[in-house]
Amino acid sequence: MDSNKIMSVEEQRQFFAQAEADGLADLGPCPSHLDEAWIDIPLPDNQTNRTKVVWPKSSGKLPLQCPLVVYFHGGGFAVCSPDLVLAPARGFASLFSCVVACPSLNQLPEQPFPAPARIAWEVCAWLSDARNLNGGVLKDAGVSVDLGRGFVVGGLSAGGSAAAVIATIPGAVSAGVKDFVGLTPLQAPITGIFSGIPFLVTEAMIPAQYRDMLKSRDEITAENHAAHKAMRLDLESRLGVHSPWFSPINLDLSNPKITQGHPPKVFIYGGQLDQFRDDSVIYAKWLSQVPGVEVRASVLEGVDHIGWLTLAWPACHSRQLKEVTLDGMAWLLDLGYDKTQELPI
Image 1 (tube, rainbow, N blue to C red):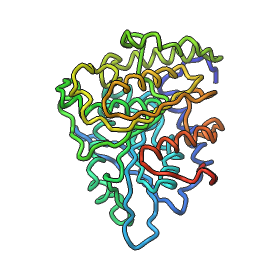
Image 2 (image 1 turned 120 degrees about the vertical axis):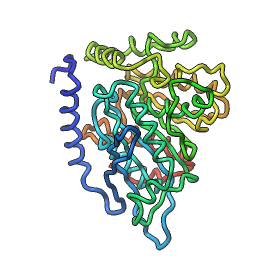
Image 3 (image 1 turned 180 degrees about the vertical axis):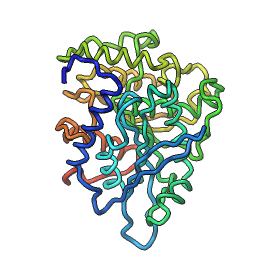
Image 4 (image 1 turned 45 degrees about the vertical axis):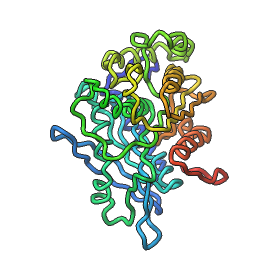
């Protein structure tokens, strides 16, 4: 593949479908201590969302009560599938005894923005009623979701962006933000947000107080920098970058209602070598103005726009990426794990 060639959406879909298939072959079948299944989550307007659910098998007579993690894949809201994040989903289920739901976030361009972000919210609204999973795919599993134990929404890249947006919607709805009128309400509050390598700012919409912080677009000079920039600008052209559906930074914090109901914990990481590095830094700075929100944010040295993924690429399975991902999720769930053990694939 020519690294300087801008692939069409269809070419990207074909490329990543093969990359996911190769990664799944390396990942192997579902481990014996876990179960997983595909479900179709019903959405407004007679739509559905294809979602992969992973959960730990119960080893006792009493049902296993589990927190819920909703984890969105990346792909610019247009490509890839939930299998892209099956590797970390299995890791979360294994180490934290949680149920993990990985929805599809690939509706562009067939459904114009903000449709993918709106769908992500509606999926979370459906999952926020524990009866939907407990009376469905988990009905005879000996496992049930207990949202009182934790309800974390997270993801990588576009998935991390969607999680950041979802965090602000309850408050924005109470403040009367017109963009969010007509949404299905949550049945339980989100307790934590995981936002890995998000894309949340552009030169066109960044507030003046953050403008000097946006340096990574020009500082990152990778071999295929020109192609990366062209792909970013192409994606920006398909997103409503001034909308709060694109970024919470587009919300007006002078209205105190905006931040009401924001999840109390947010974990963020960016990559030092990523053109979107400063998006994570600026997001953390923006969150510092939100009362009652505890933030843990870091920029990973030597890391590009990558995360712990199913893909059979060595960079996706580094101990550094796995540990930062597991550490973040452990903190959000108020749990721990044995760091001396061999980490999941």
